[in-house]
Length: 297
Image (cartoon, rainbow, N blue to C red; front, side, top):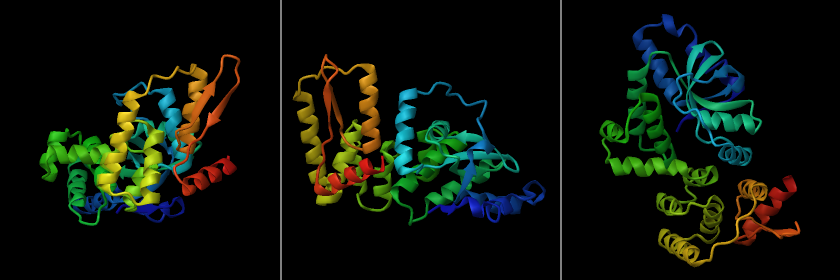
């Protein structure tokens, strides 16, 4: 598991590793790269510059806002990757969407993996070694796969060859990173299994994913029971008549509430402007969770 370095320890740990790295031997540099590969450091956002060669230029503002709201509640689980340019100066390699959302959420620092200027082969070797460890959970494996793709410019096919896994296995691990942060956290903490997580990927609605995740935890559902619950939900959704769409402003309010509360909030508005907000819950524990969040806000 990657080691978490707090900001207060950054000067003693990561900064010490990086001191005069350019003047050190190739063997010593390789040792530093291996250490950094397993280390997550908290880097001030003010010290990170965007990569000018980033191919992606457009980011959906609404999706960024939703991610920012989620980060306020759950924090940033998947670290970004940066390249060290000089002391207290870094350049983003991967994770611009996460970095932008972190700024929107009001964060001043983010967890990051640090790469050196010319360590392509060494970082790949270190990551492939890391993926062979037996104590990694599914999310850590998925994050390492994604790092290999981002940092070493690999395709899924290339990656499957590097780690000795079927392409479908690699793809299934990477899909886990599409789950909301709290569900990824549950997977890391073994409150749900990979089977539960794969089943939850069959739902596109973020709030419903979270609702069923809470039901799994509260009622100790098996993978088969979870799959049956999701199948019934999807079948019911197909048969339901289409509901009238909300106006753009009301839709934004509803989406924000869903992201903030992690529940399938329904906003109903009449032509007169009057309406109501419905917040469903799946259990007493889920109700208490919602009440706690409402009190905080």
